[in-house]
Image 1 (cartoon, rainbow, N blue to C red):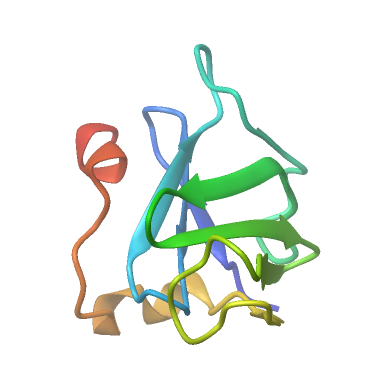
Image 2: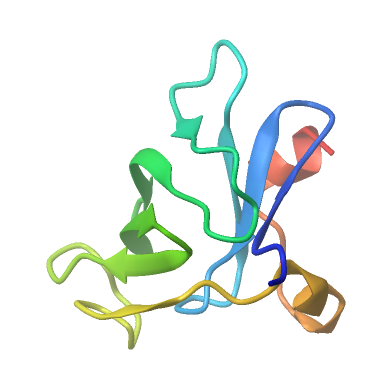
Length: 103
């Protein structure tokens, strides 16, 4: 299997959102509010990840489920596999500010 997330030295968990095409980051270390199961191949993250105005999703066992009400892209209401992190070099999108601040 292949890793679907990356943890930065600053304590953020990075993943690529297949819906909006961006890399999102959540803080794991204090003062972070998210927890991660420690499995890069089949990650689960609690609580949900909400990029306001773009996408709101839960990540469980390597799959991302987008909410139907506050997600604005084409994957609204759908569940899909998180893409492998090794594909990150091919992503042509900006990284969220949190990921830039916590490399």
